[in-house]
Length: 229
Image (cartoon, rainbow, N blue to C red; front, top):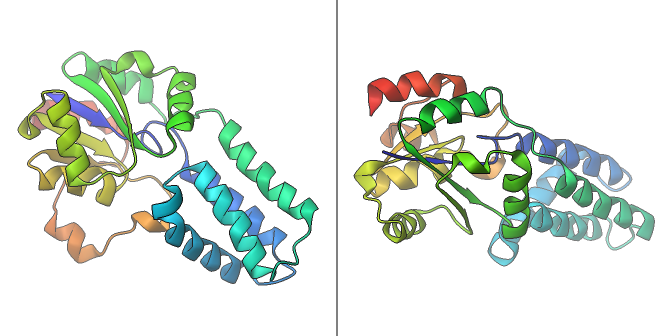
């Protein structure tokens, strides 16, 4: 069996850093709007820019700069703009902080199955995080993609000669890691992260339609796979 792993918030912590940065950004814009309005307007700009910038820290930083100019009506000073850029640098420089038990789980699962990483985001940053995580040697293949949709998964599996029925995807995101794989005939396992990016929220009715097993933590994966695959 080929087991695919998402990276951000599945192998290492990620979204908590974005949310902490968003709170700092809301404070910087406090002279022009309350925190909820700042956060909502930033998210709207992020969403609007998705097709232009894609995913990742660089896209997020550009959206913060745009939001700051928009919310302040262009009155934000260069010192605060520099602080926003530094917030982006801090996220880019953040070391990969591994999820609990990840090394043990990869070692155990890797004895029985072939492992690969499939993650989306900025190519350079994601590859750097994979290298710095110390996990690279556990994986047969590493793929950084622009989107996680059925077409992308189909292309990747075809490229590597993997049949969908031989593939299981593990991740914290139902719409990115689980649903698209089920749609092409593979299987997915959902391992939620404590905080979820608003873009990854799903309607409960949709989640019910695409039923998939949910585990409480990565540590539960080896025993579950032993009975499931």
